[in-house]
Image (cartoon, rainbow, N blue to C red):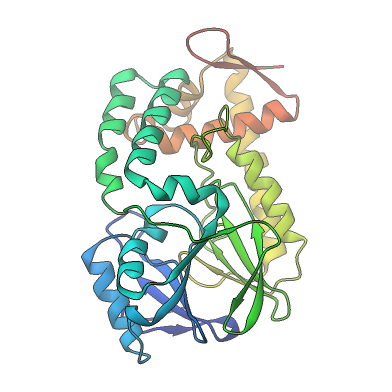
Length: 332
């Protein structure tokens, strides 16, 4: 789909796509406007003035304004998707609906994300990233935090809940993996869904290493394992189109999901081969696979490696040794 950033583009099921610019490497993010009573906005982009101006222009193009939004639905808790939520609510008084797991994190975004940065830093060191590299990434946290601010979730959403969007029932489907809070909004009658970053057409969504959203959560969520279960659950649905958080609409879902699952298995075998030289940390394997890139992008590469190591451990092809200061993996 090609559209200017200020002009809504037609999407499936009478939903308008609003491509919004971001200052982040991911590029434009898709918000979706669903006409009706209330006027529904799904995602809103990061808290960046350029994004806000683009959102205002896109709404004005269809005779609407930020102040008209009655319901703001958030597909997940990443700043490029929810960052402007507080500003939209301030101007419109809109009700905010999002995954129940995001209620506490979004209520105090600054404190929660600062704590998360610390936990991620500790986890990187535990998996072999040099302390100085991990701490430098942690110290860059305020740069990311500035693209969002705290917002109250008025309507916590859980799997199976139903939202009326434009007079049509959309069933909430929890799809953790890319993030722990990913939601799919499914219109079964129209065979369409709004999918956030659960499934993108051009690239495979990364399953990021992250601390649990709930304070009661323990351990590291096995993000790729979660994501594979979520992909299989989506494959079982009768869907023709998913409207994603980035890029064009996704079609041919089952073939695409099969391709993504097979690619993950192929990458897992690659890391299993790297373990032939003996036990190694996840960061050791990242360096072996990508060289200096693993030092420039330690979080992304570590997430990639750990996800596929988790797959190998689950399948009984590798073992995880947590006894030492650094976690190491070995072939079984």
